Image (cartoon, rainbow, N blue to C red):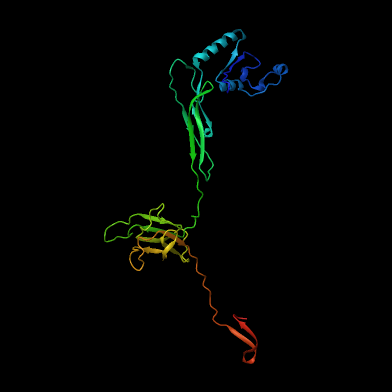
Length: 306
């Protein structure tokens, strides 16, 4: 509380309200309602108020010893820390599944050093988003209702990038730094880069511009054997300058003739191709009929049996 008031709540012994200030409201006697009015609040409110302010609820106090009990409790408040708890707060609170011990520690003497520990269990369930989500909060050390320390907590949920246009992959291009076949120098194929989409610049982030010595154009999962596919390889980025157009197949040496395009590729564009027009049966005979001699008068052209 802002005023730093500590509540010492005391309930006198009563047969009509067995649990004192914590007694369920619906359990209050009709005599109490008739003489004191209809009470407000919920069961356990005495404990909640006391805990909230760092105080204590004392139930079942005898009227004969009420004064002595108040003095004893106030003295204990000066010499004792009644309770130390760890409490989650802020936007990260929903991520805390449990803190053990839930009731905290206490009472603890103020004249001694104490080393205590808490176990925090975390469990997150956050809806996916296309932007990064950041949740800020804290784990607060609460002693007798007052925050005396804590630790900031930051939980970052990475963005979930929605699927791009990757579901249709008719071709896969494999670019090799060296020959992908055995060669007289005995070297390996070097670095390999696989592509399935138009790539305007092999420099970033692939660092593969002007390094391709051999390549393969292979059928992808959506390959149509009836389509005419081509892939264009450009000398410069962004699909400009001289161009090499190849169909699906293996090209073990781009330096050899007649290609001579080795170590020169900087961008790649997939020309997806379209299926060829379906075959059409020819019409072998066309008959022209005239109603006058010498092909005169009206004319009728017949393409099929009539």
